[in-house]
Length: 86
Image (cartoon, rainbow, N blue to C red):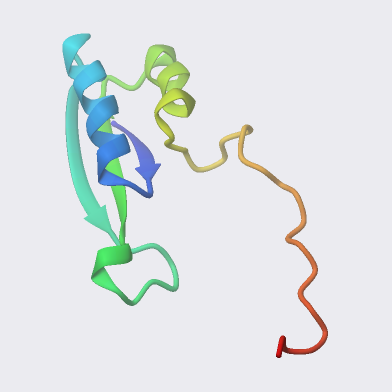
């Protein structure tokens, strides 16, 4: 069973509908990501079975990501200001 991660439950729900229409089995749960203390900010993890190339092709369309996804941005974060704004 493969996992797909989402920031938004709505994005996950859209992919669930599309996958179930194609005959996939899905399970959605909320899970805290590293550094998140607020339960409302926890991310969503969608488990899909079977996990195949058809699922992978749909992930980016619906705003999800997978660990090690080559489509994830690897850009350096922007520079922070040296002094606080006033």
